[in-house]
Amino acid sequence: MKNENNVINPRQPYIKLGVKQFKKLNCSQLGISHFYEFSMERDKPHEVKAVPDGSVDLLFNIGNNKVTTYISGTVFAVKLWGLGSENRCFGVRFQPGLCILPTDLSMGMLVNNDIEIDGNMFGYHLAEKIALAKNIVERGGIFKRAYENIIYSRNELSDKEQINEYLVSRITRSKGQVNMKELESETNYSACYLRRIFKIYHSISPKQFARYIRFQSLLGNMQNGDMRYDELALECGYYDEAHMMKEFKNYSGMTLEQYRRLKGEKRNE
Image (cartoon, rainbow, N blue to C red; front, side):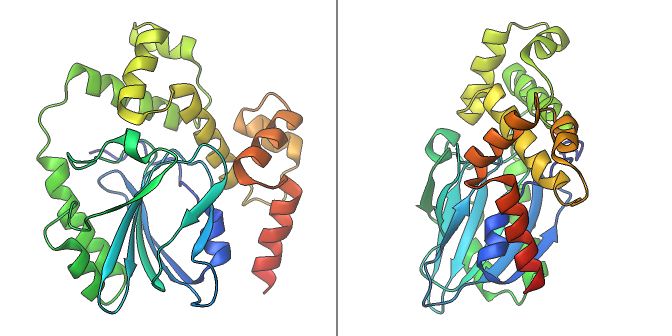
């Protein structure tokens, strides 16, 4: 799988803000964005807020005697995300729209939801191997080797699958700034047909997916604290500053100003 889609780094900012010893390992292969791991305090709720990202997360909650595995699809708006009862977690975050699921799972089961699964669905004895690994580098390597078997065992892509891959790539590369008329023109298919194809594979519409990608682009651009709000709105493809602020609050649960203050306070701790 080529890495031409790897232009969005899907962020879940509340994880880093709400856990201890957060580590991240970028990945540029197999449609994976990055691996991450962290620990949680036993006397605090094992949950953080999740925001829309168009991505799938696979989370291994590692205890002394067991590993519980959860898989989550994109949320529609900010909501609580349970992280399991044990204190250590290892996660895999896929690039938006690029996760290949085992046959027993469908995206319809995962969108706006997180479910517990057999940790070995993605590979033979995978959960045990990840639990026994020494660090995030070893865990990432173990997962990649297992996931390769799923990727490379796929049959040749059907016409519908090729259309879907084009839509995901085009929307992602444009950072959510492409409309249905452009997609119609580029593919020679009707908007109705494109929406139907996209929903089969992602259980959301191309328009929803584009909004999530645009929001993620906004989170990335906010790393540059010097950009004014009107500049951010223009850069990220919003109609105006008010439109950007309304969507940001819906997707993050707070205003842009509150979010910037929260990030600043965390950096200063």
